[in-house]
Image (cartoon, rainbow, N blue to C red; front, side, top):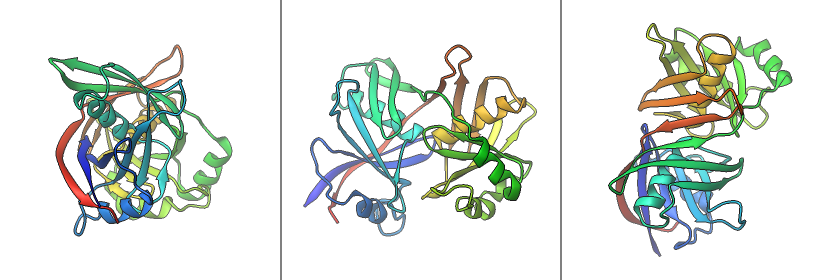
Length: 267
């Protein structure tokens, strides 16, 4: 059986999107592994299923599977792409969309001009800190900042952001992170932007990570390196983060883009 898919990316963070309201994938973990292969499959950081919401508090749902088949709780870049997908494919006419994820309901605010979604802002809710996990990580891994944005992140400020491949692979599996962890290496530049490279749990080095950009911005502000508004420059593009002082919510903004549509056999 062949199903339709759409390849999209946000700042180079690319996923395969399937409308689960039209197509049923019995084993999404297996599909994510096969289809994400950049030599033998479509090639992506993972698979995203867009579904109808089972609860009135949300309009749609998102399930996301990393390239290794593990299910993630949330992805900021993927949720931005979903906003563009839903609006431009005519599945909604709303410019404020409530998206149910494993880490709660996220509100997507779409900036639309002449029927085209130029950018999407996601309310990522409040960051969460864990002092015990922070201590365990710092004791062995060096000085970083642990931040949960619905999924776990450990942010290390360093001049050597290119250690992402060697050190990120090790830290993902550090004992302080029993469910593994996303690892960010960040450097505050002279112009105030933050150059960030990321090792994503279950996917390895990726071009960008929305929750990782949020975690980096929060960590920079928390440690006094920047203010509450940050521009995060990742391998695949630039994301803008605002950590609201009034409600403590973190807002992620950036563009999303279609790459192509296709059909593929179910595994």
